[in-house]
Image 1 (cartoon, rainbow, N blue to C red):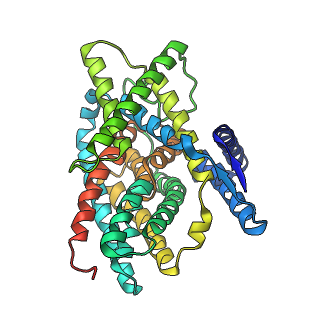
Image 2: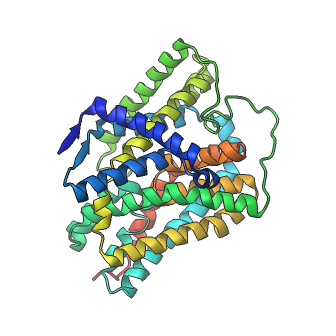
Image 3: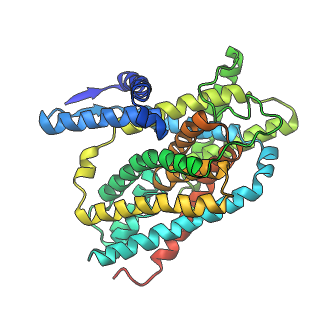
Length: 401
């Protein structure tokens, strides 16, 4: 057993990001399909850890205590970057995209249940290998797994949920880039130049751009992020068990939105978009590196064949849905292609994966302000509400006996 403490895990995550950068620099095919750096480096390290465990019986354990705070910090920056006046301009697109996302949730659950039935498995297993863990992620999957185990008698529901969410996280980071690249090259799409493009508006789209940031702005932004984390966690604890219960990261994002806009409207403080985006990109990269390098790939190796079939079909269906539904409904243009990449990210994995997918695309092909306006809010906020409603509706079906 090799155990890395918090500092050593943080160092390893930084090295994973540097490794991913070098892998992409030396592997044209990965650059061609816009695979994010954390995905390339993190998966390689996860494979090495898996090989060490399988061949030499040496298990490496990372201290992932920083993983959740980093994820919360990322969502806090999404909220702090959400100017309500700007959100109004993307309101119609956000509503349409939310409808598209709801359609995927229904398709995933219907497909999972149908596949489980065809494979002779419990229907509830198919629901667990659908929107519960794919669009829902690890947190939602673990929460619903308890319900499935207690009320429906599904053995090892938590272990299955974590394995399915892990599978989705990997595939979400791998298929988003190729899907968007295919659409962009197939239809010869280019970004539309917009008047008033500034460093602030493209902050999350161009994470490697060099921008002037003062130490004071960074310290003030860290303080705002800390407030979002503290208040968001309190609200999550307060809402626990209530009808409007939401995951903690959603509350953190909500606090960030309210804090940013109250300060702006009252004229008390102007949030530095440059500092917010810089700290958000750092948090995002480190979170993904930690999440991917610490994947327990042996849990995936132990998945039963029927569940592997269900997840494989779900991945193919996600790619097809992104190309033939998301892309077409959202306008068949460059923004729609970037939205398709983001949809693959959180439709199978998580919102941070969606952002990483879109960053890899916009870094190569050009900015998409609409995608970075719509995806964070829908993928981090509205999807959890929509997913909870869809899951509860499917649980009402009399097919789980």
